[in-house]
Image 1 (cartoon, helix red, strand yellow):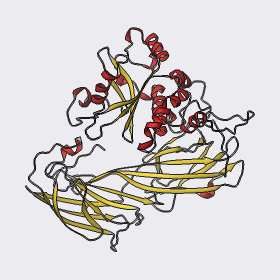
Image 2: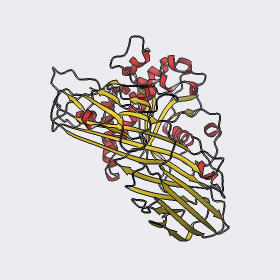
Image 3: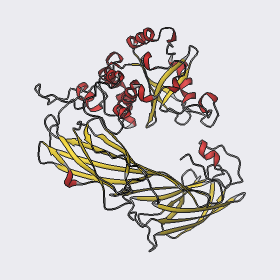
Image 4: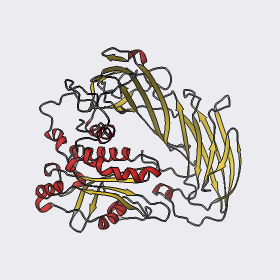
Length: 522
């Protein structure tokens, strides 16, 4: 069976590790099998007039007794659900997020999310690992051994030195995947949750975070594993069916730009390779080349973080003055049965943005006039799955009317009447690959000083505003990252279906008003 899922191991992956840990590696990595969870909560977030409330809560008395023995006088008991929920609501800003709370929002606090600490009447509970998915908040409190816990200031403890955090995050990830069902089926799935938890963490001891493996056991699905086979820990069951290999490259960009001489554009490009390998028997060894050729800017990959199933990966630490030519990375791995992320990477030395934009906004008491100019870079594939520009007016009254003249696409007002949405289309149709928009927006009344929904939008008052570009391009990556299908080798050799795909998506792509100030943290 799987001792730990693939998700938790990424916190320990820097570049690549051998399949067997060296003798001098810290003992804490070998203690993963002994990690346990003190408590687990699943919270339904606010919906309409309903406040957050706890859907599922599970304590593990044996682990709690071990915590009391481990911490001694420093032991902090877990409050009741009625006392704990307000603490979680305040720490995670589930309601009244715009209100300043010193214990949560002051600038000298170290940012370590999704790890939080809760201050109770008896002391501090740490680390509370929390993640939100589809309207549900998953929280757990793993047991941290005293030898890696800085009781004087827990926030100074490097998270990479606390394997319990990685295990706890993998556990709540498995719970989120198990509860990923239509809303009408959630109630029945919650009734099955205790059985799932008992199988994944008997007596609070984590032994498996693979949802597929756990469900196969609790629903009595047959296994096809021979007793003579020796499978790796991350491959606890065998596959039966037609062999196939699916590889997907997902690349993303964050950018902040402003058409001012004193302003320098900022960007960040990063991506991941997702794999699903379905082969019969004890598994297969797969080798492939992660190269950069053909389209895109062919920018060298920087950091490469690999999954623990990777046996070998070529690594060249590129210095700033090194040869800018890119070299392929050859990766050999033995994959698990379920879909997993083979590696993460970042891109360095990005010079040109995919879409250059100029946004100008002039606001008056009851209306605003704006112009937007977009220019597609010549090296970017002019074939979008979608491309739209959203211009928010969260700190103004609702939009009453809109007059717009775009050179292409359609301009509408969002359903909440606080955003102008320009659907540019799937291509830049002009020969110079430019698109222009001029619009006048009339509001239902003067600026009433409405509270902004987020801290960033609170900055956006007057001329300090932005337009956000959202796009996705299939079969393209900005860095030119691709997988050479001729380099893919499977051992033992067999006939299989190979599917390789790529996409390039904007995550946070802001064009700031050239007449205002720009806000950025990059």
